[in-house]
Image (cartoon, rainbow, N blue to C red; front, side):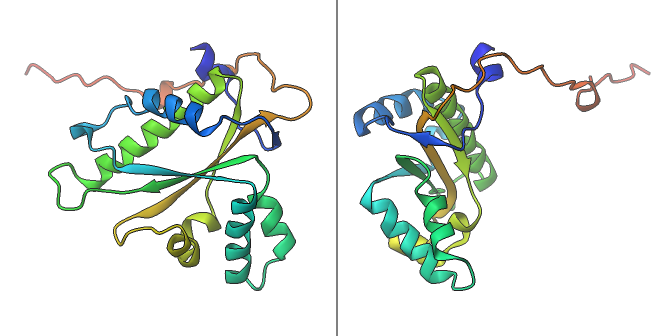
Length: 182
């Protein structure tokens, strides 16, 4: 409960970020999230340093109306951009919506594991998910699609507040089924 109530999305991140081996280790834990059929319908592409500039240039070239420097800043806001690729098993008995739920559950678990190690993260979507040029540049298959990217690193300046968030009032979102005996 502490990890869930203290994790925050962090917009300003710097070094250090987990290296590839530490990311793989945390991903091993996150991969135990619910996944009907253990399909693991996802994959990650880790992008750092100069390779982030390649992605930024790809997005900027595709968006001539947007300011290229703004796009570059948005891609370069963290030392690690972990790009999440949804790779559903088409035609499988596990429907695609369940596979998408599995990818989402795994990502949330990964964010909690990163938080437990002292890293900040933020799940970014938007243009990154809809860019045909970026999908091609990253080598996505025909059935694959981008679900976003985690910006990962160490929170800059003052640490994120460690106090717990107030738990949400979920009463309006919870009911108990009671079948009449009559």
